[in-house]
Length: 263
Image (cartoon, rainbow, N blue to C red; front, top):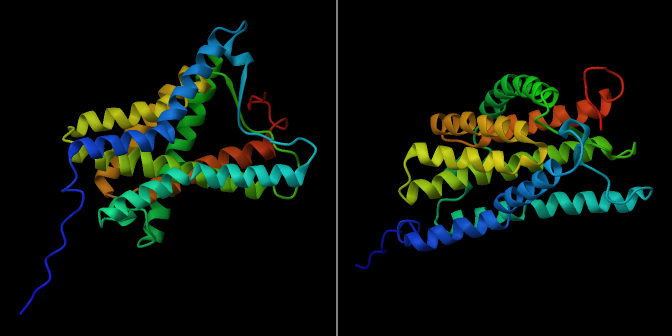
């Protein structure tokens, strides 16, 4: 009687060189390239006359001023294409017969993920705002303008979608995928944590030294939580909540409260 062979974990059969090259390609198409771009932007800012706090960095801006429907099309295009590397990660993990479930990016525990994410967001969001205000006052940070969209009907939905896109892209790649690959390549947990945290800080360097250090610290916390929970779901929820509050809160409060810097 003929029996079917047991499936082999495709990742185990991949040579280290292949896994390393795949990881570098994913990063080159996503947040690794963003890190280099942020470095170039930071060099431009520090070599420009004037203090950093008198310069601004806009996170979500308009692509077509005075043309709201064209602007909306560009916003949706930008959000969708930014998630292409996540689709690539899903393909690579699926090829290994692991899937996104292997990094905890699924809907198997929605209530738990959201509850944990809300707690993390409350702690890190408040701490992060205080750190940003202090870094800016000390001259280590640009003035961050979370959004500069026109007052049109799609403004808030686009801001929320942008927040979710940031969360999915960063946590899937910088935490779930990168740590899985570095573990497979034999990196120690401490080295993998440092790589993930530095990468996260690097692509926020366009905001200034404060943005780099603050996000690197956030990266350390997120890696430790991922190691404990084995899921990026709570981290995606936390990140999405933090960015949503930042984007929508700025849209509602900018110019109405004195403590919030505006560009």
